[in-house]
Length: 265
Image 1 (tube, rainbow, N blue to C red):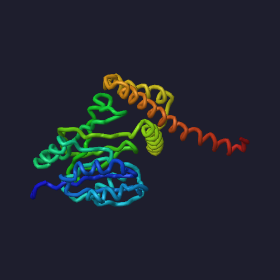
Image 2: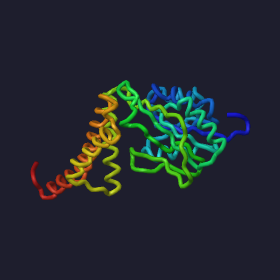
Image 3: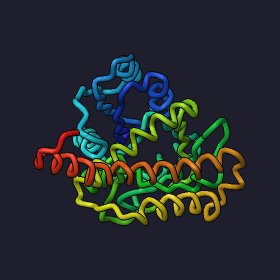
C-alpha cells in the first residue's frame, strides 16, 4: 500500500493452524496495514508463526465461530477489513483487485469467489462459484448466522472482486470425516438453541436435496470422483445434524421420563 492509500486490516481466527497460517498471512502481508489474529489457545506453533508474520495476536477462549470472528473485527482499526480463514490464500489477481477496489471505495462491501482444492483437485463446479462477502468498510457490518455456518453481512451496497480466494479445505479425507462430524454436532447444537424441530422428512428429503444440489444442479459430476464425494458428504453431513438434533429432542426426554416413573433400565 502506498502512502495516503486507504488502510486495510486483515482479520483471522485460528486454532492449531500451524500448517496453514503462514501461507495465508504471507499472501497478504504486503497489502495489509495490520493483521489481527484471534487464537483459541492453540497447542501448536500457530500463535508463534502468526507473530513472526507481523500479526497482532490475541489469545481468547473459543466462543463459537460467529462470536470469535466478531471479536477479531472489534480489534481492527483500519478503514477496510478483509476477513480470511487460515486455510485460505489470496491469489495475485485477487490481491490486485483488493488494492484497486479500496482505492475507489464505490461499495460498502465486496464479495470474493472462493475456489477449493479437494482430494488433490481444484473443484470447478460442486463448490464453485462460491461467492462470499469478505471485504467491508470497518463498522459497516458484522458476522451473523448459526454456528458453524457464519456469514458476514452489511446493509450497504455490495460489489464483487476479480480473482479467486484459494481454499485448502482439508488435509486429507480422514480430516474431512473428522471435521464433518464436528460441524454436524455444532450445527445440531445451534439448531436446538434456535428452537428448530426435526421431522422425519428432514432425515430423508434434506440429505437428498444436498446431494442433488451439488452433483446435478451445480454439475459436480464434471469434477469427477471429488465431485461425487463432495455430494455424498453433503448428504451425510445434513443427515447427521438432523439425527443429532432428533436425539437431543427425544432421547433425553425419554430417559428423563423413564427415570421419573421409576423404571429400571
